[in-house]
Structure formats: structure tokens, C-alpha cells
Image (tube, rainbow, N blue to C red):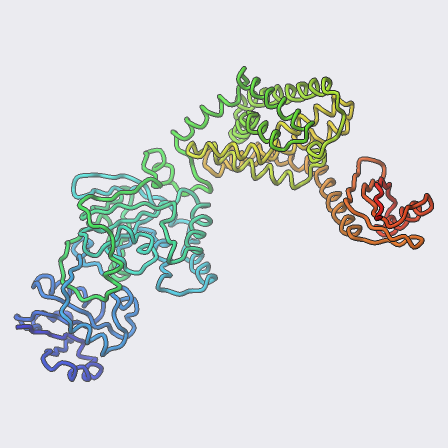
Length: 632
């Protein structure tokens, strides 16, 4: 026969008095202390409990040991408990639900011998714990304030040497600033990110490690992933990893770290985390069970790809977080071997470069953008430039010399090849593809800088090396050199200088940006990198002077086009309109090239009046090259 007991704080007798009328068979027992075991009749089948969190844990232990089912009637203010277990905040509704004897079982999670209802924090897990906003609806700026207050203590950012023993046999060593452990989806942010592997009845708990490799990652990358996440698209930040198992022994080899259980009880490492599978028949709402949706498996789940585990990284990070990430010895060896090879000139390099030059030069003459793009893809000139950026960063004289020599040889080869092709092509016509490379501006420098960042990032990651082709297209290196060669072939020194300035813009932008990116990726400390970066920053500033002038002219060009576009003039009863307006600055005064559409033929006096009207409209004296079209 079913015997149900409702155990509640005696101090709240009046609050629960109305519940007696709901079911007269329920035995109501008030308690005044935590030793309430003797108050529960020995033949009890189902326990309904109301109390503080520590008392709920004791009641769960009792129910587990005596193999009876249990349900909770939450106290007023236990909002988190209500949301975690999908309980009602209405007293009578919660009690009626608790009267239903549950059939499903949940795991019981322990830290040492202490039952864990929510989670366990080890060390500095502030980021993982502080942003549990799936149930705390805080405004964006409040999240930023909360993050800043909790993370401004930089002393907490030192990595510690962790050793985790899995099921008493398999050891994992790594470094992290802290960790958090939980068993089921407790409606926290971290639980939402782990939804696919958390389950209240799979007999395993999950230990999540927070392991940022740099202050930049902790203060910039990490908050972005937390601040802008939403419930539907939450995932673990890049600086985390996890181990899922039945039993975990967590040790810290260089310090005793604080261990906080459910924000209440404090221990010190080492601690043992274990899960008793299906230990308690427990009454929770449908939403709770629907969240425990992971596939049950006997195999442990381990994901430590983003966690420092080699001795070099662990030792380095245990001294404190660097400003930027520190690359491992293996990463150094692999990337430097590739860059040193790229810095050397070879027959293959020269053959591809000359072929690319021929394609680019002919593409410029026939005014074909697709042919020029083909030349960009074929040209290998990006490789020694990226190598030069690493030489600048690391102050590696040998790498700088080899890369610079290869670049100079390559540049000379492209210009001479393009000039020779020009001498044999019986066409001297400026195409739009040529013209587009004669007026570099600050915008071209920005493109080069972004392309340099992309080139360094791609070079650092072999998995995305195919993307380097896109970088080569984004920042054209061979086409402006080909235009410079065409300028020499035509005897147009101004054309040569303008096109060569575009190449120099691309070169310095790529070198500076790629070097800075390699520094952020951890290939050089700031002390070593600052000299080279400063020198190239000065070079970029110097190159920016003529680029700024061109940018101002471009702005002026746009302004004048807006003024003259769709403008009508009336001269001696003749109605005129300007179209296809182009403004050039390579002469003593601006030259406006346009079409003049008129309803009548203009004589010389009309043309002089038109020139005066245009000059007056734009506020400066200009030279005008016009093509006249007449409406019939």
C-alpha cells in the first residue's frame, strides 16, 4: 500500500495548512532541523519534500538509500530549482504534481561524498559560471559590467597544471585556469552548450575546462562568444574542452584550488567526481526529461583539442597568460620550414611568375578581367612576401634577406617581361584595366592590410590553404607590375610610377598586417616583434602620403560627378545635358571627359559658354574633352 509523506519546515506550518485538504491520505510532518530521518515513517513509499538546498540534498540521500521515490515542493524564491526541474511556482499546483508517484530515475552526482544538485566549480571558472543567462535575463550592458567586474583580477588568469584520472585508469594532463562539472542539463549557459552530451540518466558527469591561451582571447574572443550567443545557437567557446565519464579524480599539481559545490560548500583539490546511475526515482516535469536527450553510451567522451597539453605549453601558461597566444614548438617548426622554402627563388618560381606576367600583360591589352584573374592565381609572388613578414616579426635576418632577394628578382622579372611584351605588341591604347591601376588610394592599402591578415591566417592553418588563391585575387601583385612594365615600354614614366606605387602599397600592407597577425597567433613575443613592426609601420605611413592625396582626388572626383551628373544647361535656347563624366588629374589642371547631348548643333561661341558654365558650376577652371551627340 502506498504511503506518502510530506516533509516541510515547521516554521512554515501556516503556508502548507491549505494543502491538507487536497489529499487526506498524505502524512504531513514538520521538521525543525536537518536530522529529520527519524521523523519519516519506516514504511514510507513516496517522499514529498520542501526545504533549503542543503536539506533537499539530505532528503535525496535518504530516498536513495531507502529506495523510495521523491518529489520536491519548492520554497518561495527557489526560482532556479523550479526552472531546472520544471516545477510549478504555484504552491497547490506544485503539491498536486508532487503527489504523482514518479517512474523515471535520475543520476546522483557526488563531489567526494557531497551530493551535487547543480554544479561544481574548480579554480577560476568565472566565465563559465557568470554568464548563465539562459535563465537570468540580464541586459547586454549588464552582462558586460558583470564580466568586467569578475575578470579584472588578472591574478586569477594564471594557468594551473591539472591531472584528471578517468575511471581510475586513464590519465590526462593539461593546463587550465579553472573547470566546472555537472551531471544533467541544469539550465545554465554551459549546460545549453553541452546539451548533446548531457543526460540525467546516462551514469556520467561532464568536466568542462576553461583554458584561454592569451589575455586577448580571454578579454576579447571569449566575451564575444558569450555576449552574442543565444539559446538556439549556443556552443562551447574555442578555449574550452571536456571529459565525460562515470568517475573523475581531479588534481592540481601546482596548487590547492578552491572547489565550490552548488555555490555553498567549499573544498580543496584533489576531489573525486562520480555519478551513481539511475540512483533515485525522482519527480521532475516533462521539460526536464526532454532536455536530458543525449544518447546513452558506455563509452567515455573526451574533447581536449583546444586545451594545452604538451609540457612546453603547460609550463609557459603556468607563469601567466601572455597578451597574445603562444605557438607551440611543433607549430613553429612546421610553419618556419614552409616559409623558409617559400623565401627562396627557384626555377619553378621564376617560370610561374613569367607565365603569369605574360597572361596578365596580354589580359591588360585585351581588357579582359577574367584573363587577369587567371594571372593572379598563377603568380607565386605572395609566398616570399609572407615569408618576409615572418622575418620582420622574428628579426630573422636570413629569412628577411632571402625573401627580399626573391621579391626583388621577381619584381624586376615581371617589369622587364611586361616591357618586352609591350615592345612587340603594336597597340598603344590605354584600357580600363590599365587605368584602374594608376590611381591607388588609401582604400587599396586597407585591402592589402586585410589580405595580409588573411594570408597569414591561411598560412598558419594547413586545412584552409586552398583559400590562399582567394587572397591572391583580392590583392593583385602581378597586374600593377605589368602595367608598370607597359608604362616603360610606352615611355610613360608617370604610368610606371603610378602602377608601381600600387604594388608598393600592396607589399607594405601585406608585410605589416601579416607580421602583426603572426604575432597575435603566437609566433613572437611583443618585445622581439616591436622593432620590425615599428619600422614597417613607418614605411606604411610614408607610403600613405601619396595614397591620401589620391584618395582626396577620388573624393573630389565623386563630388564633381555628383554636381555635373544629370545637370542641364541652356545656352542660346539650346538645351544641353552632360553624361559619362570622367575626371582625370594627370595634367596641370583637372580634365573633364564627357558626352554632351544637345537638341541643336553648337557653334564655337556656344562651346565657350558651355565651358564657362561648367567651370562656374564646379568652382574651378578645368580643361574639357567633350563628345557631342545630337537629338534628331
